Length: 289
Image (tube, rainbow, N blue to C red; front, side, top):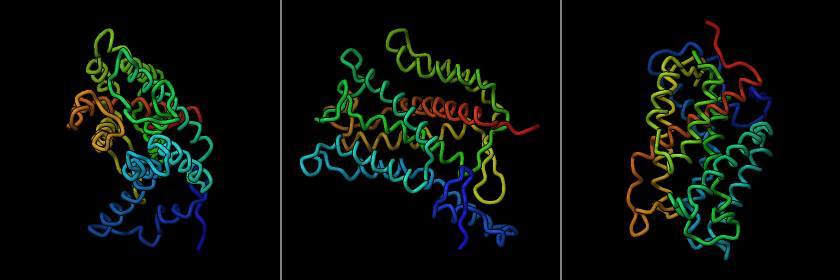
């Protein structure tokens, strides 16, 4: 069996099954739909590898922890182990790891602010040895998981962006999104004004991806909304398991307010912008007209 080298020069036993077989290039109708749908699902699962394993750990580790190790500390150990395994198995490059670490730092800084005494948007109620400023260190990996997914999906689906807005404009709005997460506690929440600007900026943008051997297209804004929705679902499960809690969930669990969906969509756009700018620095993402 021939080895398959991925776009970033990585070797992976999974990559062999995620590349088109020339014998199937003439498939049509239901057979093509089935193959593309299967490959789309496999590539999505491959892109979600870090997030999937990490989320399974969140689900599996009991609140009391294991072997007298608190739950939050175990989740940190597991997250680090998954990350090291992905590097060892060449499922992730060192450049990708650097970007993931950046998302971890950005997310952890937000967590520290949001859980601080004067804000207390949510809380981590369980004890842990690896808490810093009252925030368990594993929490940054939840943001890193989103970044990991976007980075992996970009490579696996051979993503290209048509009509990408000027990078400096996208970068400014990404900074404004991040700043609003902090500033809205003091000067008001401007997310809907930001969303209106994003709608205008990305209205013409299309993401082109390749689940099999042909390009498919989707409005870029729709992809942001869909990713944000699935993160919101994961957040509901995590709060149900008591990993963290919002003030209205301290007495009894209730569904995370649907408004958080918009927050996750904005966060996805911010992370996507960082990835896109990093990709642009290495080489273009534009498609020639």
